[in-house]
Length: 538
Image 1 (cartoon, one colour):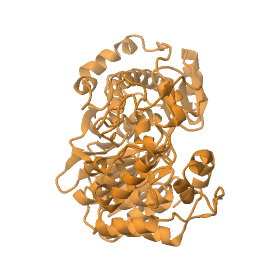
Image 2 (cartoon, helix red, strand yellow):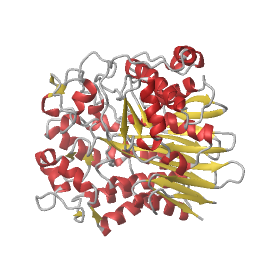
Image 3 (cartoon, one colour):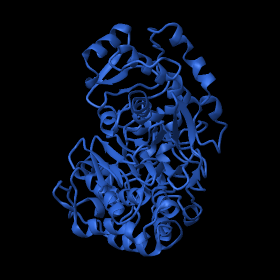
Image 4 (cartoon, helix red, strand yellow):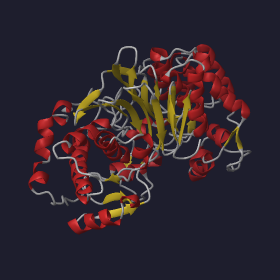
């Protein structure tokens, strides 16, 4: 399929990146599978096609799904969990380096000795990705599990070119060479790979065969779990077999708000969509304005600043602190926050920054829908490129760095604690309007939260389809200026924002490729598309 693709189907469709992952998802539906089978197979294939972005032992799969047989909507939270031996003083915290590429300096205003919370065995938390894929299939899919794994096995057998993964390996060469098991996976005869080189992935064929035969739970409760834990502990990490065996994804009711007659659903905390829902509540306090009007962008920027301040002050794993979720999603609270903007429409909040800006991450998103009413919006990630960049022995499994998503400094809302889930930026959404159901999401680190609020608004207010919402101009701002605006917003908008007093950074892009899949209520047709690839079934 070509970039910017959109497909319409009478059976089912998927929007995903990489391209072959979308095709694999469509093939699952051709075999008689549903949107859940398609999502599981596509996510699994992505682990080998783009290993810098996600992996079987990646740190999170977060989804909002609709079960077409019942009409119920669920949050699927397969986030990483800190091992039982974790504690808030487990890393040696140092002054910030000032390097904009340093995750700790950018997000936590500090450094950590040897980047131990980012790379290597001490960065490894309990991975959620494999369990998330397994749960999508086990709870709602209909194909046999080996059918879900088979396309990924075939990809490996046929040979997967490094492609863009080669550049990611080069950017982390020093870390990759630090661990012999990682070098064996990501180097070619000891040298950096070229895009045309084939990823051999020693041990991965055996691992996939084991997963196909023994099931996905083997990563958590079987032979693979023992091998993962042993490799981590031998290298000085704290992850144990007991940590893996105790892990369970959480399937629950989602967080929900309404916006101009539509219902908008997101995953539970500590995932990121609550902040996008809060922004929608505030935007609903104003009359709708077309985005050709600079007032639209000014209002969006002011609302996002308020939402981000609440996010950075209050949000964490609610099992470990009191998080005022009901208040943050209250319509009355939203109205109070935006009252000053309503009274003084052109006022620009120029309070100085109190929080560091975030970093970009290696993440993918996929959305699927079928004519039976099943929809999946799922975000999958390793965190930053290759996660912990630590491979578990000869399994071929690149382990995630869930521990990097905690604040390494003690005494913070998002500090490390045993059994705790880290706060992330995943902005997965499922939207129901009077006319359609829409599953949507994208990668992009902290920028996900801002873009998803705008995407939902476009889907509801303007009726945008998958391609239109993906290609629309974007804006991002956190707790304080500058405001990033894509150049596609146009000079009249950008100039007007500057004239109001905004500090505007014009950028080529904000966040990554947005993928949506939708089901029409009137005729049951399915449409999927986004900035990259989509595939459908007739």
